[in-house]
Image (cartoon, rainbow, N blue to C red; front, side):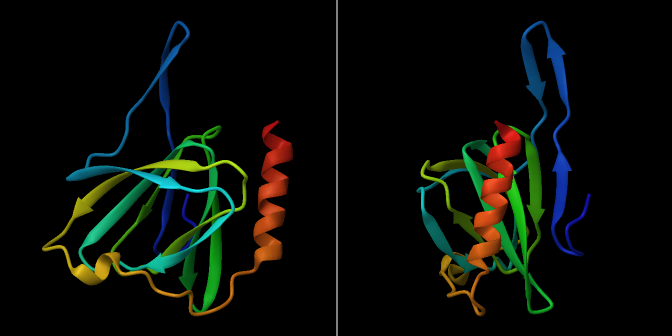
Length: 145
């Protein structure tokens, strides 16, 4: 499934053996664990030589991206394992309107030398639609219960 021309969303398939499910994660050059506090709206980032492959392992989050001067919001939750792939050059950020922190595994693919600007926060160029973001969190909280 594709959210825009840039970001790819893939539901994880699992192999179940008894009461245990095994998931195949994305290959990477570097794997990081990202902690995003509850009630937090992050700045944005754009990576020049890096692909992010994100999987929520605890909590829930909205990943934002800017496409044709319009935000796209992708809801991710530990309850429905999905990997989103954000290629180089895509402006993206995160919104956690939950009380609980969110833990994300980022399986990073490097496509060249890391640029110091890759990790320099960028103020969102347009205001987020916080009402819409709150609705997404509410809708998913009710449907996940």
